[in-house]
Amino acid sequence: MTIPTEIQQRYTRQMILPQLGQDGQQALLDAEVLIIGLGGLGSPAAMYLAAAGIGGLTIVDFDRVDISNLHRQILYDDHDLGQKKTTAAANKLRQINPKLRIKTIDRKLSATEISTQTELADIVLDCSDNFKTRYQVNQACVAQRTPLISGAAIRLEAQIAVFNNTANSPCYACLYRDATDESLRCSEVGVIGPLVGIIGSMQALEAIKLLTDIGEPLDGRLLTLDAELLEWRKLKLTKDPECPVCAV
Image (tube, rainbow, N blue to C red):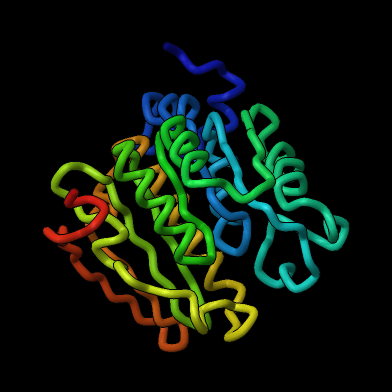
């Protein structure tokens, strides 16, 4: 199948990469990606995926745009204050890519709804800010065998990991089984704006790599960043044989 000339012109700078090419671009155009959370991580992730030519995005967030969001949540500006994040985000993403198929969900999802949305997606990006949601998303991704790209950032520290959720790969619960949200909200301890931009952009990059079979994704590995010292560490993750989610 030949991609129309107009589409080729739009994505020519990435299509000329031998690792991507026309087949890779077509894979992006055919893809459905679910993004949970449209804050500091979800903003750059959604923007870069839309710009790269992802065919469909389902974006989930129950919140409204607040002035305290603007230093790091780059999907929004002063004109969006008070709007639902999903509404403001969809408007901006359509400006970036008018051909984008976009579905908005502006409420908290139940575990059943998360499972349903996960089943419809090729890849899930967890850009949420609490462990309860992360555990629910992970459980759904494990059950559906849907790849999960997880990001997090707080203060001057951040991390990203990819969980392919194959039979032998670890899941998010192998890494964090009993974590809590106590003292881990940026409203309490703060976060630097560009840090979430780095991790959100990397989530988009890993999604593109997975969808187009480029290189080696972070599957089964955790990449952490100390932004104060600008030091990266990469840790290999192993499947927990007693994991309550993926070992069942």
